[in-house]
Image (tube, rainbow, N blue to C red; front, side, top):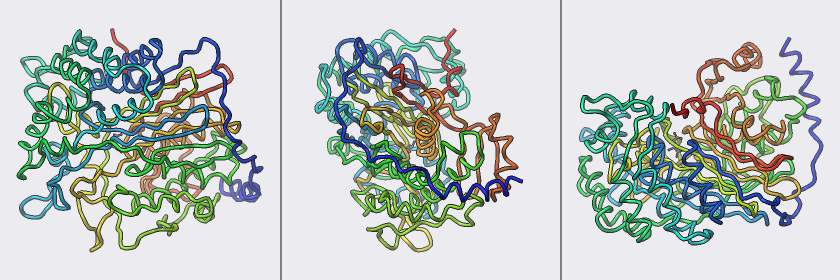
Length: 572
Ligand code: GLU
């Protein structure tokens, strides 16, 4: 029945949707009177930190940096100054820029970094819980670079809310409590972390308990006063290097010079059109922007709006586009400072049209192989990629309509479990392929000295067909991030969703040939329809997702965090 429906539908689909006019040149728009801006983040206290900057006359960059700093305090399991991130900024005049604060492997690292003395890889968790997983943190350097270029308030001002939260204390919310209970050995792995979050008997402090993190307050005060050099040189750099190196079997696994040498980069954003909307996102070393633009580009020939948001065919097409995009991602995406990544070829409309032609609305592709975009290197193999959750997406829009989309991470929950001066150190280096080669071919995302591990983070900004700022969007959730981001963009553009509806829309993703549909949503009841379209290995389970968006609707800008985490944030 369903198959008959989809086959007959195919002709209609392939007739294509009306071609919309090309994106008009952007013209500045007047901000609505009295609008100071808005912020979204995974914790309302971090949002308030950003809002305080906007009220003080700051802009979206100021607000985003203050929000990232506050998240270090109140959501220590997910992100912070011990990790890295990516920031994409889009203006009302239609310009875009992007900043790369991705962690770097220390100079001593190389392809066999994670292998034991026997040449074998230890269990994944063992790699995470060691200094081997810690990359040189990039968030402070990137925040400073983005602020120096685009900020309006004094640098020290951005630290005020975070300092107050750390110094005066913040209450443990149900979400943090749950992580502390589930991961005591990891979260409380160091004596300082244990003293912050657990009682003398080793039990996690209860929901509502006030944590005072004076070490972190001092760290912030120092960076506020002296700038990023207070992080990358001197006593703090020494502490980060020593803490990390002591937890590895290698000599000089991280040195103060690794910190002193770190530089955040400004990179060209990856931009493309979806229908008549323009999207700019982050390029390598994240796979996120390319994957989002590929998924959208392959879907453009289908009239998703006519198909509808609760039609299995819509999401079947989405799954097929994901499978093709992720096949390319696995093969080609890594740090473009080290390997040649054919970014332009991968998002080229004619290449995406070829890839899209592989999608059959009536059935699933037997095998989604990577394509050959212009500029593709040869002799690369895809690699392993472990998945974890420990990231936060935030966004800010200011009175001038400037959109900032920022994803900040320490990789897995509580990062490596190591702590320096009140913040967790990331485990970002496990985002590398721990195996340098697969079937005799070098993996693009292998560990190399000074290289940035491939990410999935996908902060993005979108302009509407008139060139007006429309959406700042992104997500946390490892390899699900580009899929969440593409889903939210589709929800907003094709289905006219609000910010909350877009990030809350039921989640569906192809992990290779296996399909995850979000438990308790209509997708679960549609499993037979997906099976009739040729999908197998479909599992309904809670989706490991956490999106965030700020969207401009007829009633103005509205921010929303993922409704799935709302109840975890309520304090007594
Ligand atoms: N470290 C991951 C990345 O950069 C994100 C991890 C997560 O969201 O849980 O892609």
